[in-house]
Image 1 (spheres, rainbow, N blue to C red):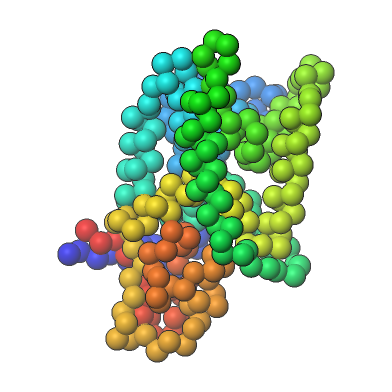
Image 2 (cartoon, one colour):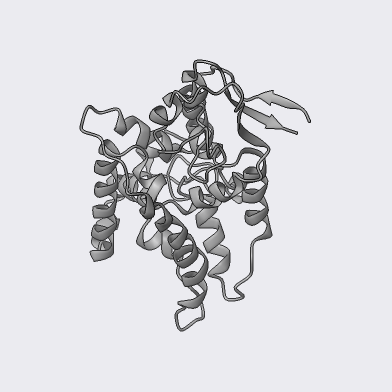
Length: 280
């Protein structure tokens, strides 16, 4: 078995910023309100990044998954599923820590000085219910007279779509204002609540609501990238547990579905018993 340490001591924020720039290269479109609709939109971004964001070059995998399942034929996109499984098999939930634009925004908000709280652990399973109900079941089960379903997660919940697509487009397209209804204001309220709660709870959306994080989290058990623990070296000082902002105990559950593979625990371990490595 070959082991290779994953990005040793490399500043994660640089990768997150670079990933945001790669996923959203058309920053000037924020001012023009133009949407990129070229060939790259046939491909998915790794993280949660709305198709309708003016700067976006790629599609959101959750949006793409629903777009196919809501068609009349209720077909399954093997490309989207294969893309998610391939990334999950290689990186697991490290996608959330390194490649997701909304994850970066949440972390920046959490740096605002404020009292911090931990999410009640049973609430972490809400994101799996959202994945099952709003991403997989309702888009197929709840159809209109033409037999076409709604992309229910994107339409009723997703705060990222409101933040980087709806709000920028409303500032550049005045004609859209007349089409605003109660649904927009409900989603705006969800966005505001999520952003505020991210100040007080690290990655609140990731922990509670994100269906993409749920998919990648399930891949943690078999992904090539793993957090390994040398139990012989571990002195049980508890520094890794107290450092983990995802509220995981790395020394006892290194492959937790909540672990985003950020590597913070590996940096604080005084005896280097924890390592983020590729196991090939």
